[in-house]
Length: 166
Length: 166
DNA sequence: GTGCTATCGTTGCAGCTATCAACGATTTGG
DNA sequence: CCAAATCGTTGATAGCTGCAACGATAGCAC
Image (tube, rainbow over all chains, first blue to last red):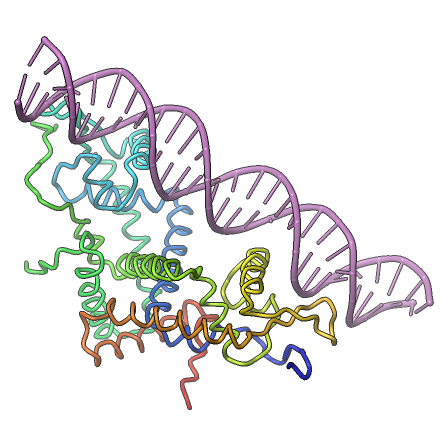
């Protein structure tokens, strides 16, 4: 049925199928992964795990978190969080204290030096975002963000509270 | 320094940090992963691996591909593709033939039954896309797709050729 | 022609990661 | 005061990813 089973060697770079490139979901997944990889790379170049940033960012917003709530917010297995916090605590960025009201819990809080480090990673990620979304002008960037937030509230409720008031 | 290290147990659902929710890159990564997980789930419920769809979609567009070009397009290790093609070939969806012009190569082509199965998975994924992007009206969906495509051409060139003419 | 090197698909391995069960400590409720 | 549930932690297990090595074939130098 194949008159001549010969590959056409003419193309310079192999592109993904039109069908996939036309799928917003595929683009979303692929771009999301690309961003995550680049973020991981840059963070690790500065001595951080990418999850360090997520954890510090959560802790940087004031409310005293227990490990279960952090793990839940990041959709992370609690057992994986243990090693992350061990590492952060060893580097004096966070502190674990027993909750006096429920001594099973650990209340995790960020330290002053943790805040400084958070600012450093934040700058790195922020820089990357600027480059990654550079193809869009600022109006489009904002429009994109609004749409992503809308999708997140429906498809990943833990991600985004929708209360943009303030 | 912590007057009372007590977690505030008042919140119903734990949300991710404001800082992360305000990051388009974070939303992109998280939504992309969420989409991929849902797609995997639905595909597997119908007896497909998600990559089966990617491979079939590429093969469904006519040009005769060699394994290296497929792996390259999907940013997939060639060794991983072997098992995928073995499985697809076993189910009579694709065929491997030696390229007579270069007997090291395998030219992979889709079979008639492969096209039928492709149509089935395509419908499944298409259905999912409809649901996933439901929070956006069709104008916004199109705007979003255009932006994602623009980002892809810069950040993941293998993903999208930008030639939307036709 | 004869080697030398590169490429293609394939196999197998080794490291990493996620996922889960189980445990001690503690709280809660009867 | 006892039983069940919860919290953080540890350990083990399965699965995936990327990498090196291999046989087969091609291209190139001479």
